[in-house]
Length: 276
Image (tube, rainbow, N blue to C red; front, side, top):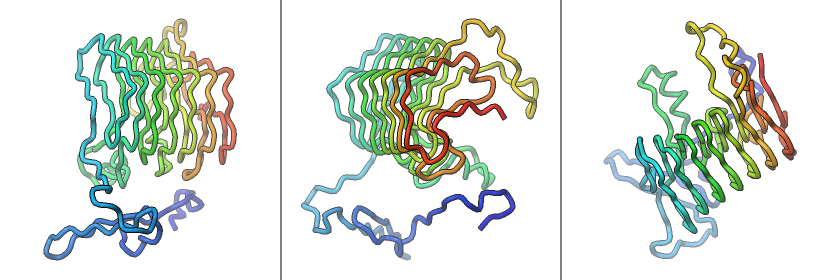
């Protein structure tokens, strides 16, 4: 146990070991000395899977909208399996009536491990929707062991969405539902069964004058608004420590409006505005 940083009470797990394959639904990909690949798979029913019934994720994004796009409307009913949606910079675009299953996966946390090992920063794939005047509605997002949905930009709306079974690694690096921007509305969404925080909200602020310096007071203060309302958040903080189901912090929280939210059954804090 690591006792020098005060986190020895946290939870840990071992991965990537054939000896740990001991329950239905688990798998392990073995590389032999002759570089042969062998997949060890314990089916959920404990029976031999029918021919062609085992599916493997082979792509990161099924729908990928490039930068400087506008007026794109992705409208279902549509089911996406084993991939996700990305908008790299879109104005007045919309996503609605989509069911996204098993969108992203990563065994480790590359954002942390790549830097700790002295390598080039790496990032896990995410369902990132970046732009202005975006509208995301009636989207169901399930079974991502890392990122959920991230909405970035001003004058955006996300409504009537369900995000569940995300962030199995229990890190604040991966948030089930994250909104960043000004004049943003997040309403009537449900988020449940996640490892650390459930919803995070922030309005970007002027960066500090130098590395290590505190964030300055937002200027202007007037006109800042990000609303989180009528959301249902529950069964959170299932893996990590120092967690909160609905979370923000610092000057990025100036201008947030949280109201009529039902937050319950979190292992630690339900609501937190962290200003340490």
